Length: 304
Image 1 (cartoon, one colour):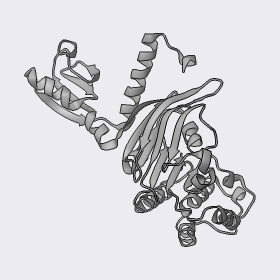
Image 2: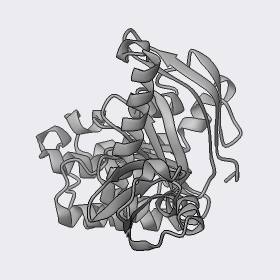
Image 3: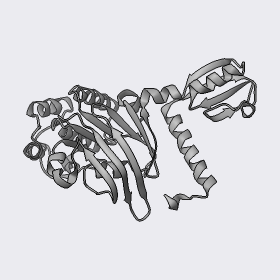
Image 4: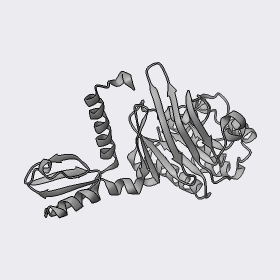
């Protein structure tokens, strides 16, 4: 496989009531990137553009150094996709017939991997897909995508309908898939535990805009809650402050932890306690900051 990853430059897509982008993004191969954000943020739109299901109105996009203008079929054969709703989940075909269809179109299909996944996820090859429960349908869509052994795996809410036992098996299966070296995973999820356990990078989308794209460990290092002796942070001019609360100890949430603590040290104010900021809290603060900026500039939802 080519070591080249995904490049998006100035990518935009407009609908009647929603505008995506412009987006500039480089995703290196061999990593898991988690796309997070509220419903309607553009995660599915981005994935559909990466699959050439819908085309950008403006901008350029390449995968593995190739573009869809000249390499449509070749690119799609290298991508495994689990959408939020898959045609295979509603198909009246038997599972083994759906596997035969995928076997025909995807040259990297592994029969050994497929058989292993059927056993692991308890799929009955003779069962008809549309007669199965929601959870079993999701298992089927996931297993078909993994058995292709794709260079790029795109997962849109893959664990919807999974019980905790199968959810853990899914995580293990994705980790095994990543052992292939330069394989890449893009996952859209509202489940922060999936982000914690799987992601190398986190991308936050909101109203079609990319608010943050950073290595997960760097992101979690940047954010911190600290407590100091009662003081007014407004008078300290501390960098990175997103929220504070006065009390017996003043609680400060910062997105520039190192710089905040350096400023406190320079002011002679000791940090009494430190605590990590959870990912869902970071997302809340970043979206709140974006909303505040829109209100301050007079922009409303219809401007996005």
